[in-house]
Image 1 (cartoon, rainbow, N blue to C red):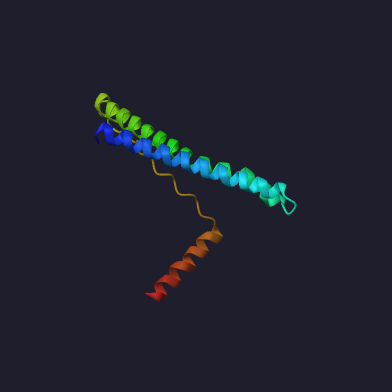
Image 2 (image 1 turned 90 degrees about the vertical axis):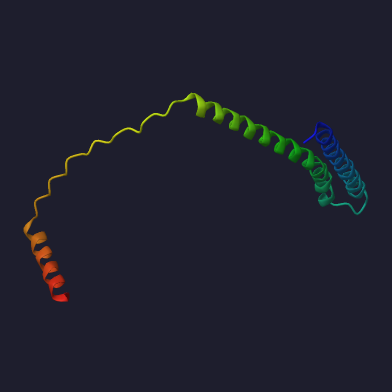
Length: 124
């Protein structure tokens, strides 16, 4: 993208952020006036505190997206450096462990296994 379009886009985003902040601060002032009136409630006071946060949200999102893009670009650059700088290392070989010795069967387990073999033979 040309530098002029990037600058224009950033100015547009900054303008939207400022308009959003001004509008939401105006709404906060309106809610403060309602809270100060005879019919005002604490709900109006809650809105007084809430509207400026809504106004700051677009600026926060612009900052957050910009930070995430910068981090992603740095990670890509670092990944490219790591890929070219590190030689390929072979995977470690695994040693095979000897097979464990079968546990000796007790009489009750041996009888149960014989019973299961008989049932299996009957089904076939």
